[in-house]
Image (cartoon, rainbow, N blue to C red; front, side, top):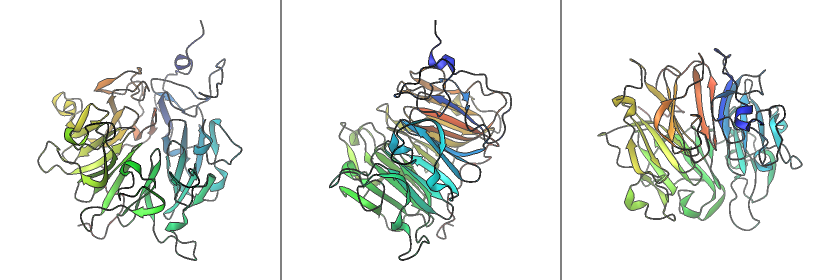
Amino acid sequence: MAASPARAMSAAVPEALEFGKAIVWGKGSLGMRPSEGMQRQLENLSVAPLKPTPLNTLTDQRITDMTFSLTGGAAVTEGGKLWTWGTNKHVLGLGGKVVSVPVPRPVKALADTNVVQVALGDKHGAAIGEGGFLFTWGYGGFPFWRQGALGHGDRVDQPQPAVVEAFLEEDSDEPKTRVVQVGCGAEHMAALDDEGNVWAWGEGESGLLGSGMFAASLPRLVDFEEEGIKCSRIAVGAGFTLALDVDGRVWCWGRNGHGQLGLGEDAAVDIQSSESIPSVVPHFPADEEAIVDIAAGGRCSIALGKSGRVYCWGDRIHMRPFHVSHFTDNALLNEGEIIVRVAAGHGAFGVLTSEGRIFTFGNGSFSGATGQGVTSGAMTPAILSGLGENSAAQLILAGKSGAMITGSPPSAVRAPLVPFSARS
């Protein structure tokens, strides 16, 4: 009997990998070489290991950033080189003639750019270059309506990365707005600049832009209900956005049909529920709990409190922030070990600890993104096993995939991305 794709690609994780190596899992496009004898089908050019498996491509590179969409993936390697792969030409950035590639291929259009972060949506991608330059590519939208998610002022497909000129000085190649973080939804993008301002563009239906606009083909500032709001981080889901301000409050806008905004049962009465203007997420159980990290998945969200508490909501399971008490009540953490990062993907949540350990949980959404060896749900947090002696420096959950990048784990909770002058 022929081995299943998941078994065919399974491999024992070495006791200790070099820093900057990736261990991957899930049913998305992971950019791995199919095993000998596997049929390469266009609808699934990559593999589906349901448990952590060392990435068998880019083995001569050190990976610094990585992400996935439902149909592709991207990685940044040491020196700022961007690689992409997948079955959807819009996320590749490799030119209009390239429809799909099974394993990572360098993005030549950014060969002279030191890329520091990459993000992918269903049909588009974005990368930040050193100095705060933003590049986008992919599907532009219909000629006269919808989308415009590339931020170039039109709805024209862009097969290769092009700089977003709206963030440049007039008649100059220097940025007037320096982008420090970017996220891609299914039909929109959002970015955070080095002054703590949040920008959004693309499809505006269901409040995706946070301004009440139906669409915007150029970046526009998000309209917060309070003046002077400065943010330290954003998180972009498929059809919604979260922003973390410098006071530790989480703001949300966009689609809410699955409770992904965390506004409570009254705000998510049906699949069409949405919020067009940013609102503060209420209901955090601990009094005056300041949030220090956030992440957004397809239709779910997760947050880390300053106290170390973890909260999750969405996927029509929790309509408001739910305290995941297992980490404290069930003594999952070692003495002195703390949670320092959170992540969310397609029906999956994850946390990274100061000891480089990973715990995952979620309903699974038949994606295997929890890495627990099953495609169904694993709602109780469990340690990600089979990692050998490897510790995680980064945890990535996106699309139907998950990955960890080996290295020294963070020793403390996430600091703000930018040094705001307004921050005390």
